[in-house]
Image 1 (cartoon, rainbow, N blue to C red):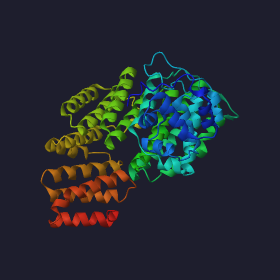
Image 2 (cartoon, rainbow, N blue to C red):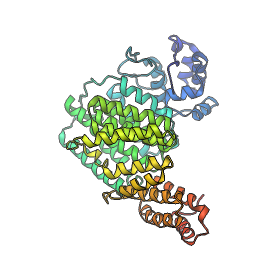
Image 3 (cartoon, one colour):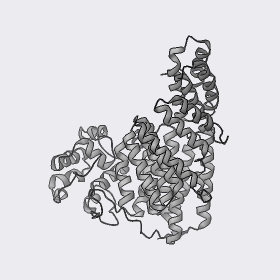
Image 4 (cartoon, one colour):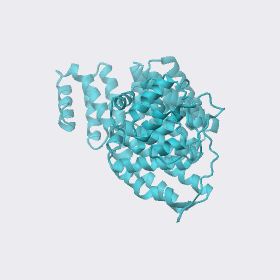
Length: 469
């Protein structure tokens, strides 16, 4: 969503009615005044502050905002001066907001310091662990990725990430975070996002927060620390996405991107933007999926990262396929194949281990399935099953995809047999995505339920996953 025309008048924060609304935390009145003096709609205000239009509407209608995290988002999105932030009960910014002449979208607060990023991220972890209702009820908004993506491209990355805390932080601490990330990633792949999501949130809150906020580290160590934390935060977001906690996942991925920016880690930033694209496309926001994939591709190209450029192209292709743009989809897939054919993968980061031939084949299968080209979809999906058996959730996904292709190809009995294999794996997982794919297959086969094999499969799904609500 374009934000070009959202301009807050210079004298807005000096108005007495605005100051009164801020002082008593009457955010509904503040939103009404913003709409009056900027001409912005509720949707546009929501995009600027990272909230759904429906939530903005409820606030304007009288719902009170008490969450510090939400107040921070509103203050940051509106570029509140420090004096106004303090009236709202928030800490002042360490650097004043200014409008970057390099960015045509001057309303983007693009100079967020790394300390502000750390503060906002640790508040998210704490709120998640304490199960704050506001976080749990946050809904996904494709517009919510607009500002973080813009900030990724426009904000400076030359900040000195150093701190003089009382707790020394060194390479062993960073290695521990990376080892924990590997462990949680393995559990995620083998058991689904719900298996260890809450445990990971507690680890971030109880073990990582003190390193960031109380640690003593030099700039080189600080950047390595933020990069390690960004990777783990991205994984927490991925787990929330897998459990259909999409608003919370969006928050985690947004903070992970900000951390990667502060760490000046272009490769990890590409991966996080690709994850954002993946989520947007999954939820049907294919236009946002395309934009985010292109942002990932531009980042990877600038950094000379061929494999990550290919990954971004695959995400873009899938979003095009969901939008039924066959030409754009096949062009992106062809470009991805060409890049991978000549890419040197000897120095791939650990977190990119999943991006292998089986994963690529599965994405090709999804693309051709969305385009209705079932023979090609089946060929690639069969190939995707020649995969590392440690990726249990991925295998469940691929089996369900193959079953769905067979259902649409006029082979319901074969689809039911393959679906039964997927059901066996899914029953071992805590993955809302795996369940959704099976439920979609169940729906696709309903028209054939008079066939004994199909009827048995549908009954098994209900017996294993519970009857549909």
